[in-house]
Length: 235
Image (cartoon, rainbow, N blue to C red):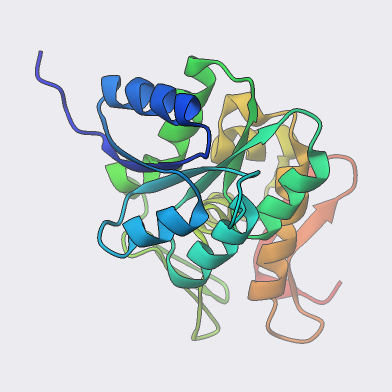
């Protein structure tokens, strides 16, 4: 059977055995993979080769995974998955704040990692472009194929996962979406018990989208989830 190329991934980890295992696992599942030993090494690779996905450890010498996330997010929109040790809850939230789209806790299973990778790379497969290539609602104009967002005529720059969350909200405008439904749709079924994702990313979207003083687009439904109102509200 022909091995269909699924996408390219840069793996950044200062532990050679982990980098080797990740490269072998991902390569055997159809991904083109390169590795880097730390953040500085990763930046050198990125200057000549741009992957579809970045997977980085958080704890590394010289430049940490957190610093690498900030650097990459300041220049590019590629999705980022961080690897963290169990119990580093604060570090995970800091990574999401720094621009990471997802995280996987060590030790992790191969199937869990592959599921997270598939979700992160879903946007390059064309899967999300099947329905509604242009979403026009209220103050919003969203070009799904170009992954461009305009609010009241002004361009808004979003990270990959911020965009994924917004497009799901926009396609379900006016509906109350539960935390679990949002987590499953945007991050996958393995993340339905990770409410910090929504807390961080909804906060990011609110800061970037709510340009008009006193105008709100993403409303909180206490203890349930969120509701998106594309025309905005002053409630």
